[in-house]
Image (cartoon, rainbow, N blue to C red; front, side):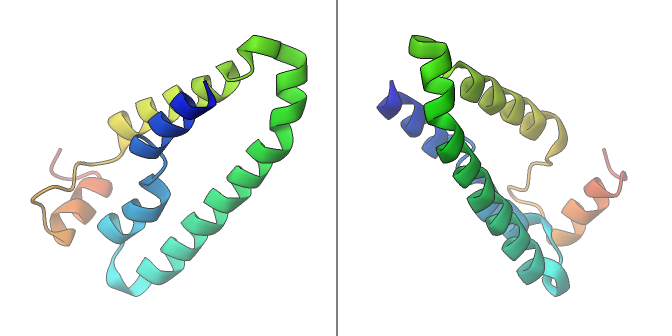
Length: 102
């Protein structure tokens, strides 16, 4: 189950904090946004690593359920809120994020 969880995370939401800032942020804030996203990602990884043994001892065979719920919630968030960037210019993406061109 660990291998499945890590595999799905790696092909799912795992790369989002590393790729998204470069795709949607203007060049003047891209470096800062990427740094913040990477820092939050590592902090979240640390929290998961620290919490896992407690969760595993409490939930036993259902230890991955809370993490799967968070992963599903994150996927829903990305699908609902994050704009598609394929084939769009940075200006088009910025207009979408500002609420124009929906």
